[in-house]
Image (cartoon, rainbow, N blue to C red; front, side, top):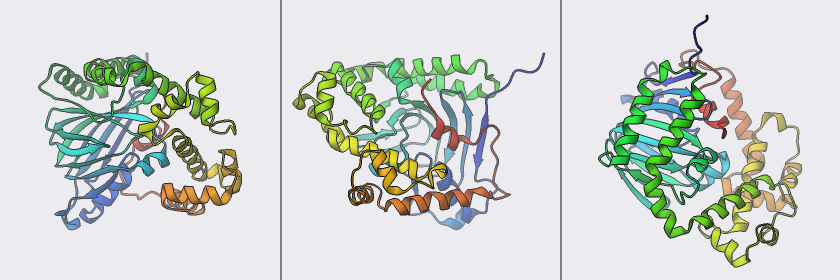
Length: 354
C-alpha cells in the first residue's frame, strides 16, 4: 500500500533574501490579509525576519507565523476590496500586541488568543512575535456558533480555562500538522472549528445576550440573501422588508453598525465589481457592463463611488491588478517555493465554507 498523502504545505521566509529586500517581500506576502508598515525605528539595512509555515486542511488554513515588530492594518476600504469573508483566530505564543478592532481595544500578551472578523477594520502594533493562526470561513464558524453576536476583537486570556484549553489545542495542532493526512483533514478541520466555537462560546454568548440572538441570526440571514441577490435590480430596503417580514425601522436598526442597509448593499456590489475588474478572464469586458451587472445604472455614479471606496478609478484598479499579475508571472529564482496547489496566500483567497 502507498504512503498516505500528507497535507499541502507552504513555506514563506525572508531568511535567504538580502536584508534591504526582506520587509518588502514580507509586505507582498502578508498583503493577502493585512497591509503592514515597519516601526519607526526600523532600518531597511538591518533586515526583517519573518516566516509563514502553513498547512491546508481543506476547510481551514493553519499556520505558524513569526515576525519582527511592525504595524498591521486592515481598513474598511481594503476589506471591501478583497472580499475576504473569514475569521482569523490567532494565538500569540510569544510577544504580543496593542490595537483596536473597530471600537474594541485589544491588548494581547504571550499566551492570549484573539479572533478577528476580516470583513471589518482593525489596527495593531506588535513587538517581535511568534503566532499560530487559523483562518476559518465565516459560514463554517457560524454553523458551530450560530448565536455568537459580535466576535470581532474578542480575546481569550491564556490564564483562563477556555483560553488555556484553546492555546494547548493550537500548539498541539501545529506540532502534529506534518503527520496529518489528507484523509483525516476534514475531521480535524471540523474538530478544530468546534474547539474554537466551544472556547469562545461563553464570551460570545455574553455579548450576544446584549444584542439579542434573534436579531443576530436575522442579520446573518439578510446578509446571505443580499450576497445572493447583488445582481438583482429589485434588491432594495423595501424588498428586504417584504422578504423577511420586518419593518423599515427594524431593518435600519439591524444594519446601523454596518453604516446602513443601502451603504452595505453598495459596498458589497462595489466589492464584486472590483473582483471582476481584477479578474484576467474579464479584461475584455467594458467597465460600464461590469457596473451595470452589479446594479449601477450610471457609469459616472459608479466611478464616483468606486473612487471614494478604493481611492482609485475603475480603470486604474483594472490596470493595477493586471500590472501586479504580470509582475508575478516570472518569479524571482531566489524566492522560496511552496509545495502544493499554490502558497498560503492563494489558499486564503480561495478558502470556502465546507
